[in-house]
Picture 1: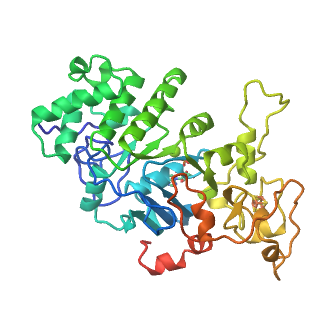
Picture 2: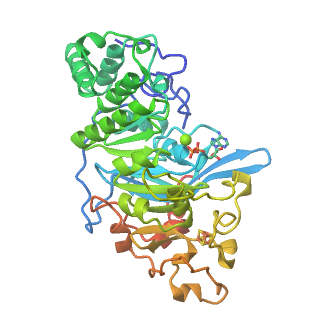
Picture 3: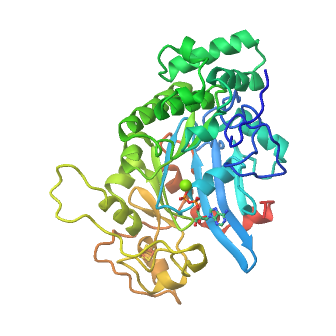
Length: 430
Ligand SMILES: Nc1ncnc2c1ncn2[C@@H]1O[C@H](COP(=O)(O)OP(=O)(O)O)[C@@H](O)[C@H]1O
Ligand code: SF4
Ligand SMILES: [Mg+2]
């Protein structure tokens, strides 16, 4: 029962093919693609065994070439997502959250391109796959939920038709069985009277109900990973919590990992296992949710957390981070946060910090450089250590392993990650 794409469709009902990484606002997806299906569920990588994590992003660099040069929107971002894990991704608007998600699922909008680095699924590079193969990954193993549910739904077809079509794209079952499964899925995501609602059109649903339908679409193919990009931002506050709770519950039940992009720290605190904080296209800090939220180490994360009002807290003034995130063509040398940082010192202006162990997280901040490194010739500077926690020593692979919530994931040496040369030499796209 094929049907044509909606004029604006993106997620799972767009039949148009594309010559490469097409935009998620556009026409790159085949039926069932983005909210997709049945991938083989891999064995979870065990800590210390060297098993590949579900997803690894390594030294990702995204560029936008233009007439007067090249804008670097994502610069050396590395992180892992373990099976079944919820990784929250936070940061100011323009920090690079959506681009990172789009690059992972192969939906970067030209002229944006992956200029360096790797995206690995179970250790296998997917960023270099030809469009047809990438479409199958999107169709079976990675799904995406966008901010606006209407982006993913075709207004011309009933939700039942769309879910059924998605199921049939990926599973070899009868149309009758697919429709039965569609009704089950609608029930699972909390749509009342699903056997009737299955024949309704998207406009007959409220915003929250539409997003539930999109979640059903995303789950109907049992993907290993869902990238949810601000999935509740377009919804009423009262509905947001319901949707996040639902997403979390379903992903636990289906053992689906989620990369949850949001600016809502409440959502992160409630939902995520680990948190990655992005700033100016780079990773500022990454670590277990409790550590990042309650004991952030990077000055930017501290500012971010300090700017969140807490009910009942005896705080006279919320923390305000002075200044604004730099435009892509004005990112300063050294640490990108240096113009706004209360702890800035000379080294911050000249050298870009790697992710360094800082209490229970990794923070890209020179305050956490080992004293020996701090004092090495040519870098002897005076950090403003007034409120800076003690340096934690050199980065090791085990330091990264300690940051994964499910005993797996990030297992490379940070120095190797951010140097990037090896990955490039080994065939990272550029
Ligand atoms: N098509 C594009 N051309 C040029 N710059 C872009 C394009 N798309 C995104 N960017 C830039 O890349 C940066 C990261 O964007 P994005 O990932 O959408 O941020 P976020 O999702 O964190 O708000 C922003 O500075 C944005 O302006
Ligand atoms: S590296 Fe320097 S400027 Fe950057 S966050 Fe740390 S102290 Fe601040
Ligand atoms: Mg965004």
